[in-house]
Image 1 (cartoon, rainbow, N blue to C red):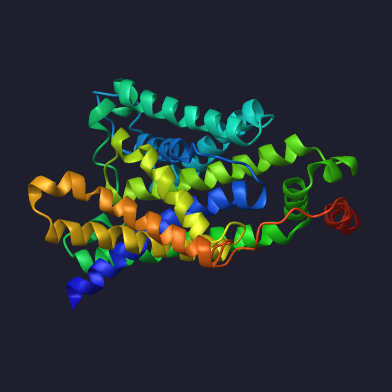
Image 2 (cartoon, helix red, strand yellow; image 1 turned 180 degrees about the vertical axis):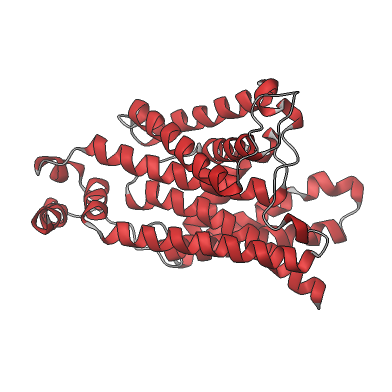
Length: 326
């Protein structure tokens, strides 16, 4: 019973970390319509930034300032937000598939830097001995997992409430208007690039925070942690939960991670070791089947709105309401 409770806490902690990444993507795509397929790069930036700020001094590489974990998380958000803002200023004039290709290129560059800048990132060996919250409880897995679950739950709740407030604010209404009818919003004096860079930066900061939380929870990071499969997982989580819904982003993350972890455990138990590599593809197949079923039954996801392209008047009314509120 204790082992089951400990695993449940571990599972929920991991799922909520994915939820944070999905919330950042939902701000960028669900609210603003920015097609980011390079989110693994921003997660990696947050993880490495926090690790470098908080690990003990190491003669083999740069960094190792030994700062408190909370400072590492704040530093990760700042660096991740700045990186996303710079990426946004350089790329947000592009649209749809061109933006996707560019953001994917950013993620590849981040991974190559992490792999080759050995003096800074540890190269393929990564960074170890990252301080862990409640590390003194590591010998008692149940207490350790429950304590980390409490911290990650609190962070996720704060981010969720903040995003809910932002999405209902005049700022959020402008983002929706830009997503649904850009010309209408621009005709009312709103700068599309200015608001999109802001949304991209905030979303990148949230993704970086998730990367920092994950780094300190595991205690070790390496470039292989941030492969493109991470982007695939998070996009499926958002689509299943419902694009545009923060609640859907969290529920979709937990549901997809349950299927992913469950299918992995089942294949490990039932498939011979020599077939493990081939059986790992069953995880992606299981996610794909679930995604197809949900899109057939609920094209907008479990909690998302149905896709729509409103007329000029509706988008103009949203922005006009924002202007009146000011």
